[in-house]
Length: 123
Image 1 (cartoon, rainbow, N blue to C red):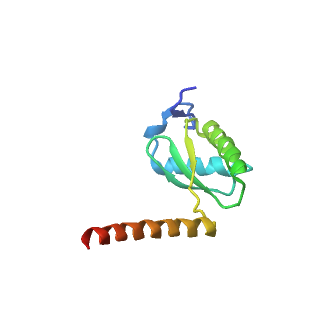
Image 2 (cartoon, rainbow, N blue to C red):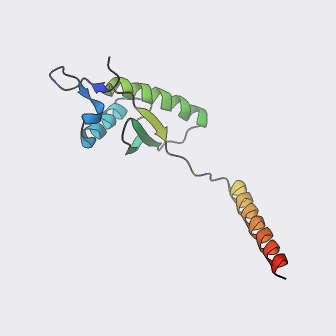
Image 3 (cartoon, rainbow, N blue to C red):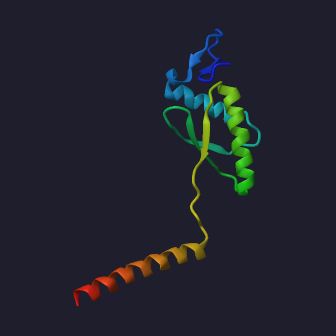
């Protein structure tokens, strides 16, 4: 099997992945996700040039579950579209308030130290 082709042309001919129109790629990827039982809640956010695809999951899972799901979904899509796609999950925002507060405090301390240093140099 060639690594950059799809075989779903109807006449058995192989078409390079790069030459498939973006709308057709998106339709193929959506169809592959729908046919994948565990990842039906995945949403395609971006299809980058080449083979990179960014997806988001709507159902909350552990990091381990997401990692296994990503690998299984990627393998399923590769078989379905016949191209060596690479899936990436959308980066999640850290919602831990303690870490967020700590980061804000550290930023404030750095700004304060810079202001003190600047004041010491000027005065």
